[in-house]
Image 1 (cartoon, rainbow, N blue to C red):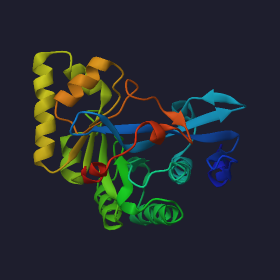
Image 2 (tube, rainbow, N blue to C red; image 1 turned 45 degrees about the vertical axis):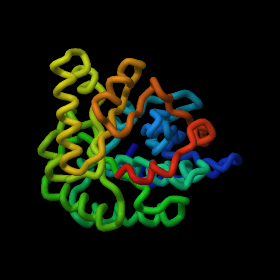
Image 3 (spheres, helix red, strand yellow; image 1 turned 120 degrees about the vertical axis):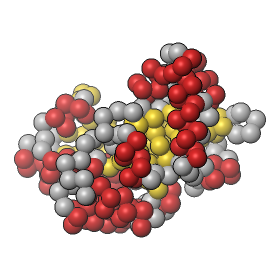
Length: 273
């Protein structure tokens, strides 16, 4: 699959959305909404996460299986292509308020020039979209970084470019307190498995509430993600979290979606972070 790194491109669809191609694979954007609550406890859409869906010969293909078969240079190319595709597809959604969460895998970068090139690519893509940098949340995923000196460079380059920063999947792999202290994120997304485990006991739930409180004191907003049961949603709000994401509220949909029609964002959503 070595030649695939130069084969990524986007195709405009009749409905205004974009699909991508990468070698024999078709790429699609699935958008999953992220919710906050209004003062009267009603759900309000405040953001989307762009998720990759792959097709091979017209059939779904697991993203984990795909990424296990390709090298870092191809992963870097795919990362950038996915962000471009997600931006194009989220721009079709009729909202000028929702945030867009895009992943950055920090393990893919080998030197500072590579970091700057990728951030500049994102800036150009944002300029061609309906978004502005302050509505883009760059999620630093949980992968371990071999060159620890590059992570601060990535963070500062993104922040200086006007993007918001999130630590993804806190509680999983290398997404720990040390990374939070290094990144100083605007938003922290809590790992679903870790949160579910904490929700299983009174002692664990107390830890969850304390964690959310400490992150608030540090100036970060908190997202509880991966919630699949109604009781989990209730506990997530009771923990003090700012935002919730999960199947119990809404499953991802291939773009374009109808989420904006169902959940109209409010003016207060702009004050989340």
